[in-house]
Length: 225
Ligand code: B16
Ligand code: MG
Figure (cartoon, rainbow, N blue to C red):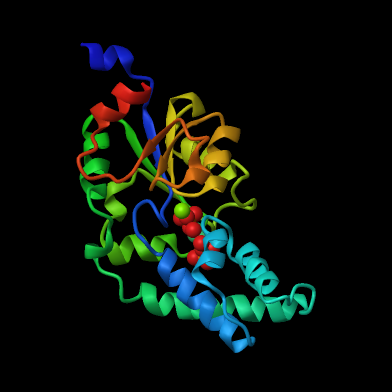
């Protein structure tokens, strides 16, 4: 069968925020509230730079936006990050399965129905909570998140650990990412990638996908093998 002859993909690794759910708006609201407490406005455009970036690196982006870099001790920064996270978790605790982005759950099931593995590779330390709130943890063969990695994207650690968790070689893995740092992490891991959402910042990805509705594993294989 042509489909099987073309197939190089045995494992799909998914970023969480921006690919499976749209938690970016909750991250933004929580950072903007912290910025207001510190006396400045953090705009949605400035919030774009925090996508895919770890919590402490995101805090540095926020402080820089307010001209407050190098102003606070490590302990104060930890307190700011904890405060932001508490606000973020208030939003996350209200999430329901309806917030899984359209077509995603169907695509994950389709990947598995062809015998390929489905893995989560997220920078978020809250990934497990989000998967549980949205009722989709059982759709993954392995979950690697911010609690298990020492180095943030664009370091490839999260994706290499994800592949290792299901015994897949990087050459048969495809990473689905909405952030430039994640596309670069995939390339550094020796993996192909799908840039999700249409941002011009994802131009380095192997292929682009606007949204999951109507997308199938067969279409993925037809496009990139
Ligand atoms: P947390 P992803 C990332 O998730 C978010 O895109 C990024 O905005 C956030 O700062 C990071 O997780 C850390 O999240 O504070 O929950 O640990 O896109 O890698 O799934
Ligand atoms: Mg993301």
